[in-house]
Each structure stands twice: as C-alpha cells, then as structure tokens.
Length: 526
View 1: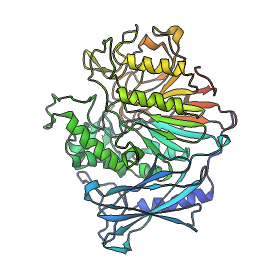
View 2: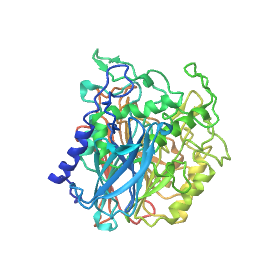
View 3: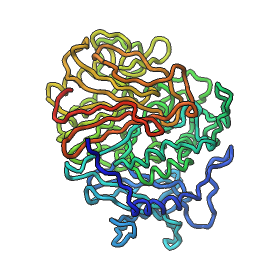
C-alpha cells in the first residue's frame, strides 16, 4: 500500500537545526545534580526545550519551561525564515508552576507545516530576552486524501533503567523522530514516580548499566517538588528534547505517574512512603503532570482539569484518550455481578459513548492506558486491569467494558480499534463474539506495545470473556530485561488518504517491523 511521503527536505532539516542548537546548552548532569547548569546571564533560558500537544486542524498548545520567572512569547510562521510571523503573547511563568507554561494557538491553517519559536523575556524588561528555542509541527489535514500517520508507546525510565549516557540515552526517540509522524501518543507511565534511579546496575551477564541520576530520583516521589523532578528527569535526554521539537504529543497517564497499581481512596502499606494517602499523592502528581505536558484539558479548556478527551485529527481520525486510573474502583478479585464504577467511572463511560456517537471520523481509535483481555494481577488475589482470568460471563470491571462494546455494536459505530501499552511487551489481539462468553459485540482489534525505556516482561495470560485470539506476541522469558539487552518497542498507525485503509505496525528499535495488520474502513467490526 502506498504511504504518504516523509518530510525530509533541506528546509525541514534547517528549521530543526535552530532548535537543536538552542537546546545544546543542556548537558547531562553529574550524578546527584538536580537540574542542568544554566548560564546565569540575567536573561531567561529555555534549555529544557519545547513541546506541542493536542494538535488539531486549526489549533495546538505550545509548552516551555524557564530557568527563572519569565514572560512566554511564541511566534509562528509558514516558513523557517519567520517572514510574516504571527506573535502570540503567552503567560508569565513563575514558581507557582515550576516556571512552566503553555500558550494556545488558534486559527492555524489545516494540513500545513507550522514553524514556531519561543522566546522568554524578563518580567520587568521585555527587551531582556533569552535565546529563542525553535520547533515545528504539522496541523491535522482538512482533506481526507492527505492521510494520517502516528506512533504510540509508553513506559519511560521504569524498573531502574534511566538515561544511560554509555548507550546514547533514549536513542529510540531519535529513531521515532526520523520516521516523522504527525504525532506521538504516549499511553501512560511517562515517569516512574515510585522507581528509584541508582547510579549503576549490574546486569545478569556482568555488564554495568550507568544512569544519569538526580536528587528527585533518589527516592519515591511524595512532595510536589519530587513529582516535578520526576517529570523533569526525562527532559535531560537530548534525544527526547529533539523529538519534542519536531513531533507533537498526545499524552495520557496511568499508575506510575503516582505509584504502582494505585486507585482512588487507597491507603498505602509501604514503608518507603511517609504520606500514606494515595489521593494526596495523586493530586500532587496531577498538578506536576499538567505543568510538564501540553494537555489541552488541563490548560483552561471547557470542562478542564481532566486527562480524558477527544483529539480530532481531521476527517480520518478521532482519538479518544481514556483515563483508566482516576475514576476506577479499588483493585479486587473482580467477581462483582454489579459494577457501575468499573475502570472508567460512570461519568467517563457516558462521555465516551456520547463522543463515539458524535464522531464522524473514518477511524475512532480508543487510546487505553491498560489492556482489555490481558490478565494483569495486583498481588495474590486482586487484579489491576479489566480482566481477572475468569473466562465466563462478564464480572467486575468487565461489565462496564461489555456495556461499551454492546453500545458500539448496536449504534453501528464503525472503525473502532484499541491501542495500549502498560505490560512491557508487544502483542496483537483480535476479539470476536464466536470465541467469547459474552457475545453481544462486534469484532475488534487491540494492539499493545512498549516499553520505550523500561524493563521488558513475559507475556500475560488471556481472559476468554471477550474472545481474544492473540495472533502475535513478542515478549522475553524472564522479568525486567534491561534496554541494553532487548530493543525498545513502539507502534505505528498509518491511515491511507485514498483508500481509507488503516495499517498497524508493531515495531522495535533498529527499524524492524515485527507485525503488521491492514484494517478496512467503514465497518462496525472486523
């Protein structure tokens, strides 16, 4: 099947060069250093780079962090020369947001490359500015024939595997950047707030893994400052900052942004924590999460202060970003015969049904932060995701998913598929009623990938309630295999503008495509 050409012209490379030069001042710190050593020139510095999030056909959200209080100024242009640039006056960045901030862009042309630069000005003297930081992104197309291509994955700096300068840091981000996608979906576990990063780790074969370390990563995160430091840690990587300057993001969260397997109302029995109330920890993490990512629903949009949202990417794609963490009920054996809360909460389920019904996009991609039919345990008797290993009729959180799948079938909603990460291996599952205990749904696919920079783990068991057939899986035979021993994993979704066909590719670092599947448009199930 033909693919939309990648943008690799000299102009594309030239505009990115400015951003790379601007971020080159940010060097990896010595062990124990909390932040880079900024030049104290009296001018604000934006060496943490820039990000753009939740891009649509006419809007985007630009993010930056300053090294001191500063005024954010954004300029956009259709060309790298910034002729006829449009200026956007952003907020005053201060200590209340850890000197982070966002500026919304509106009225952008659809299907076009947008070049932007962010300048920070001293609050008391707008003439005293730092060096601008450059970036670029594509707006979503207004025409179906333009096509859409994006990547997804998750799980970064987990299980003690942080930024290793010996292997070039998070090199997978450089590989993904060179694929030049329209955007990147991070399916959760952007950080491991409950995971300590040690200076070194000895591998089973005797080799030594070396980590960049910071003060905030030397213990589990509890305070707002420690959560902020966890989100800041990954930005120490050159590859990630270059990626952010070129590839827009759609970010969701899962458990490790707070603590492994957390749920609302949980009281921790963990000696590492002095704060035992997980709701307090989650509130601090959510604040830092909103400060460090350009998420539209956390930055002043109607119905804000939530992670779940729809990102509309032209006539071919609506992306439904779920929050399977904030509104769930407690982890349990999952055998309830009546469960209206489930893993989404009643209000989010109603929202999802409503938005799916309204969608006129050819494809409705449901971005879940946890898999549906994979059995994810939480201790000896409780379960963390949807399924609990009982292959019979829906119980517990499965009841809510059954209700959603039934709704999709009866409303004849076409073009749905599910993407997720979480389990630290890659697989493809096809769900069909003829194999299932629950039969009132249309067939669909679920694709799993990741991690980007964390340990890999053996595959999980399947639950037969929704009839999954695992047509592909790649997973190690032991737990916590380091990124030095096995390639990072991510996925690619390519929607052809002419035919409307959607191709999913499960990829590994190094360029290999492990598995691919072509889906046809306009079908309720396939």
